[in-house]
Amino acid sequence: MDNTPATGASTAPATLGLLADKVAFITGAGRGIGAAAARLFASEGARVLLAARTQAQLKTVTEEIRAAGGTAEYVVCDLADATSVRAAVDRAVNRYGRLDIAFNNGATIQRPGPMDRMPEADFDRVYDVNLKGVWLAMVAEIAAIRTTAGTGAIVNNSSVGSLMGNPELPAYGAMKRAVNSLTESAAVTYGPEGIRVNAIAPGQTPTEMIRTWEEASPGLRERLTAHTPLRRAADPQEIAQAAAWLLSDRSSYVTGAVLRVDGGARA
Image 1 (cartoon, one colour):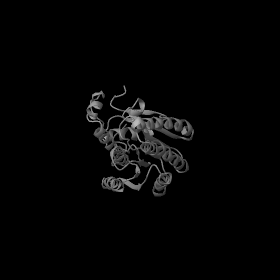
Image 2 (tube, one colour; image 1 turned 90 degrees about the horizontal axis):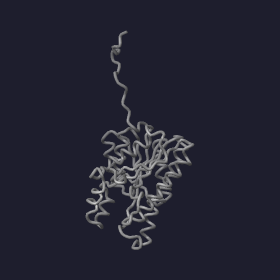
Image 3 (cartoon, helix red, strand yellow; image 1 turned 60 degrees about the vertical axis):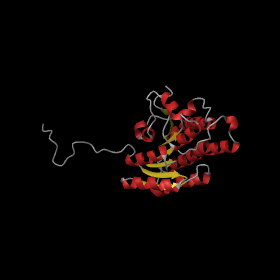
Image 4 (cartoon, rainbow, N blue to C red; image 1 turned 90 degrees about the vertical axis):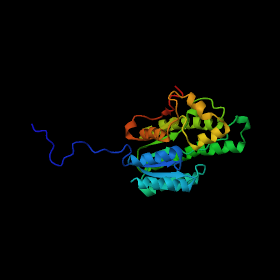
């Protein structure tokens, strides 16, 4: 038997990206983990819609993706405003024809300190963005996935700080812990429809939030690193990689999980 490949035939299967042919919606996509996710998802074959509050940052990341050969659009969005969130999700559907996956990454930080010193207005802002904003986004995303792609996946960005007492960021930790609960409840509710919902819980990652926290708590990064078995911070792309896997078909039997991506900090 002659096993020699025919002339012109490929000797290996074509390589497809992890998110090939997916339409992805990403919040907080102008910087940090969200921007890393936007670049990664596009490089893995997704058509991405970036959403955040700062147009200049969104434009920069979008242009970078396009320059690298990816497909990207952006929309300015305030996660604390229901109309703005719905319009942003609708933009993804109107631009690309459907929605398959979503990464709810956008969040705001509180002023570090004990909860009895936190102004009520600051608490309300953290609630509006970090919890209500995620709920608003999930509601819009589930409706869009259901009526277009039919099945899909959502990943919410939580925090390793949601898995323990968090005296320096009590409201932030509380909202992220509530996001874990929303994630699990949604997984149970929408799993029968083929919509998977998971969360990731990043550890120390050099983002603007960490920089803001460190300004009020000098030596923060060194303390966090000392409590991390891998003895380093994560690169934002490492966090994005975990989200990409959970959004991909390779995690097709995973739902309701809160995946720690923390270098072993909570081991």
